[in-house]
Image 1: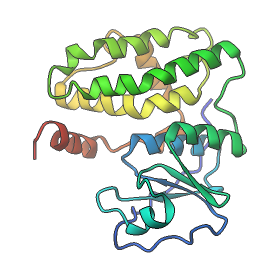
Image 2: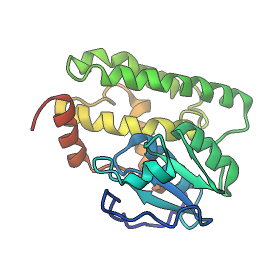
Image 3: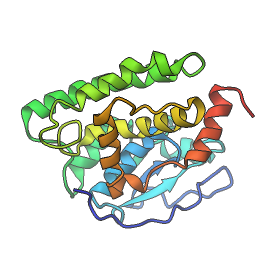
Length: 238
């Protein structure tokens, strides 16, 4: 199931002192941040489709962005963005679809109409789910997020006869959710001493299977670094 990926060395992020790459020279470039869950989505699909040699990864320091990124690449000044065929596109869910449709490699969109419909339903919920979880961090997240993680547990049972993923097979739905669930699992474990998979065997199995997917494993955040950022941002700890 897991595609054999090319092991990449993470190059330093470009900051305000960095020169831009040779923009619009025909090279396809994916601008990301190593810490951004939205960028991680597109990074995963790039890896899964085996496009490491076709789409160059350009990491940006979000705390010290180079001025040329907004001025010359992506006026919205966010990541991810994709430079391809003389234009720059953004928005992570749109980019997942774009990369899947415009580059070679295994597709992450099932052909089964029932799975496609359920996948769209799950995608339509993801922004609400993540917003609900983030909103509890200064309150009582363990109790207040039960419904969000229970929703995932129930959803993972829909096609579980076909496999441990949301649509049975590994798909764009898993790619859309895992960057956020990865971070939530870290935060709940480290900051609140709680396991979000407790009593949720399907969620536990899903995370375990995703950890076998090399395309995803290469994109995971450093847990210690992420916890430090989280504590400063949400808990006011220095």
